[in-house]
Length: 253
Image (cartoon, rainbow, N blue to C red):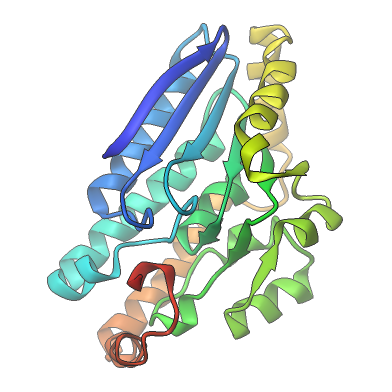
């Protein structure tokens, strides 16, 4: 259980997340993920990083039970951890391919929204159920996956979008059967890793440099409103309702 790194092929580093039962990450999980992605990017022999997950889904966001047990201290920790993990993916010195299956919710959107490419299985769904959980955040990253008005509608309703829908919007590279996901992600990573390593790193820096939105600053701005919701008591009130109603979240399964 945790975050592991392997080298399935020359030039490719595979970072795998495994926090049963649903990959709802605790504070340490986000920090471990950030460290693993940064380490892979610093390795001069790596030309592409694949970010994947074991279990029922790619990522179910933060561990709400940890937040409820530890209060504001955990909120500070998880906000910092998420910010670092999202930034690690975006700032990774080499391109990052996200291999997404099952649910990709909350913090999962922060990860894939900052990835360079996404390959998804047919069962993958993407969404931000934050308003149902007394939180805010990652609209920055959802806005990189869907058009502006759809982003707002998904955010306000806590609805999800399918991999096929994101493929239609151009944010998902390929949609494949679940059994073919690993191979499809490696196929794309292999094609990227075939390029000159030094030039790839320059390309990553250049593309990040012309992005219209500073994703780190934008996300940290959003997190300020998460703190406001917590300090005002709104977050606890919504979370309590979410817990009583069972809200159908993967994190409660």
